[in-house]
Length: 202
Ligand SMILES: Nc1ncnc2c1ncn2[C@@H]1O[C@H](COP(=O)(O)OS(=O)(=O)O)[C@@H](OP(=O)(O)O)[C@H]1O
Ligand SMILES: Nc1ncnc2c1ncn2[C@@H]1O[C@H](COP(=O)(O)OP(=O)(O)O)[C@@H](O)[C@H]1O
Image (cartoon, rainbow, N blue to C red; front, side, top):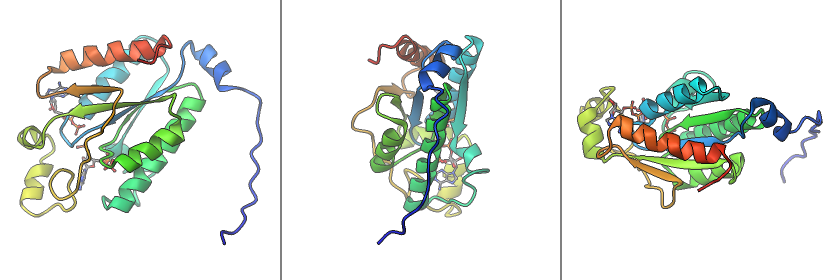
């Protein structure tokens, strides 16, 4: 049997709503999923800049940076990816509770892990955005040279090559970055985010 843990949460009485009111907008998480090279970082950086320039309190979490700090003990096995996503989602939840909009950009290749993230953050506040580009296009882009490393056998468990990416069955928004330009993708994303800010979840 699991050992009983004696933990007691004390409430300051300051509500999420009060914090959101002070920030002038509701808080939520835009969770971007997609292959390496699909365009998650590019779009999340531009979206963060747009939100910031429009006076919204926002913060961006990205696999590459989180994995160098909080999650530096984790690799790319299925178990480690699950833990990476779980911890990242807990951080999103804390940011959202503090009234801040989060843009989370993680490959998050497994449906189960994305569902866990959604449950942690809360269905109401979790918006899954699939940044869709095929493995062929991502290979061609090879922004970081990781596809080349993988083809040379120097990188194991690389998503889309020797580790699975499960295409999401249901998303809040899908952006096909093979067809759309960066500007067009960003405009759609901004429009989408504006509907959430004004309280109308599509
Ligand atoms: N084996 C392997 N597979 C996938 N990605 C790898 C791997 N090794 C290193 N990288 C780099 O790590 C970034 C992905 O980290 P994430 O935390 O988003 O991954 S995951 O959600 O836990 O699957 C990923 O970032 P993006 O290219 O921006 O997606 C890579 O820079
Ligand atoms: N519509 C688009 N949206 C985002 N990136 C695009 C788009 N079209 C082409 N790209 C290019 O694809 C690459 C995506 O790289 P990156 O954002 O680092 O991907 P990821 O973070 O998913 O690994 C960049 O070189 C970017 O210029």
